[in-house]
Length: 436
Image (cartoon, rainbow, N blue to C red; front, side, top):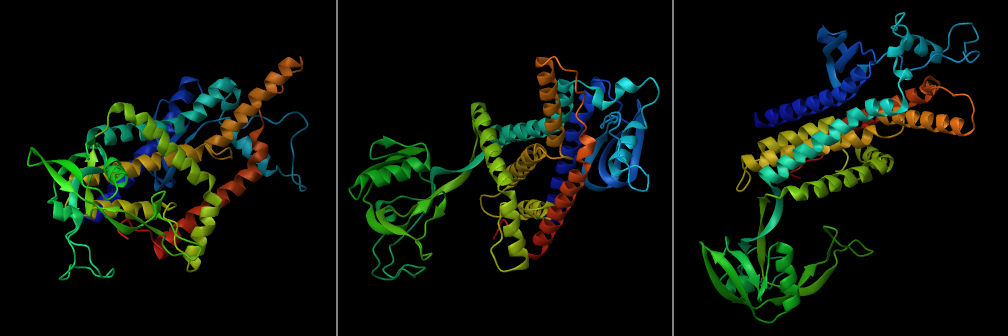
């Protein structure tokens, strides 16, 4: 039941994100006088609708997106530029152009989208992605300031009791020497305040102090049951994995790299730590840059997903479809264990919605039709042409005829559908799980 609730939460969150994205288009379009006959969430058959002030608001059967229909997205063809098929019928471009203009009644020509100035076109088309960016930033602020960000703290969660002589042993054996932390009397729940006289605020400070101190004895100040106490810890050298960028480094043969480092045998607690508001902008930037990296490398990642789905290659956990996102939400809602309660589940669910909205923001800015970025690129090109014409005292070239890009638009739509089908298939046959 918890799994289903988690899926429903993320579905509702995604639909609200889509709805607000479309409102980001609708509000400026109405403000600038563009005729907007429809505002719809979903595609396919209409389940419910209501017309208010000339706009039909509704919900459709397939909740896979949404749209705001604005009349006059394509300008009329220039004189002599109209193209027809060999049999005399209008071409695909001309049919689309006619459909875009047919709802403009006499006297409403000024309400066509193509008649907007370049800055107004940019405001309308940027409104949707900007709404997703705002949603992502607000949710991230609620997460960071209200609930906290999961991170390792200076509170000890576990203390290793011995140093097994057998590297494959999972339990202490007679004759195994005590681990330095246990020998010093460190206990789970101790909050490390200072190591060898150096104050520590993060677990990275603790590991840095251990490495800097070598194998000499170090006085460690800890808070235990609200009281400060000091213990003496003498680390020992032990082979430890070499970690780079959060992963264990390997050699040319794929074997884990190790090195001798001072070792104590203690582990940190992983807790939600509330952040100051000033940290939120930097966190938003980090989410944005990581999302850009994923989108830029998306073609290669999709190749990897295909190889995993139809072969034996490991699945890339960084790219999943809607089914995979739903699985993540279900697992988050159903996870239960020590230290993972309502606050942790809420934080992970918010983090998922943060990532979804940032992905919607970045993906929609790709300069290809029918994405918002394609219309933005068209408006920028229109502005550049008009500026050059003014510099040359040439006639106004008029709006950019984006209708001529329809063949390429259909190719992009086909690729997007193919991507969705591939991810859905991979999410079913080679799913990515948060729990491994």
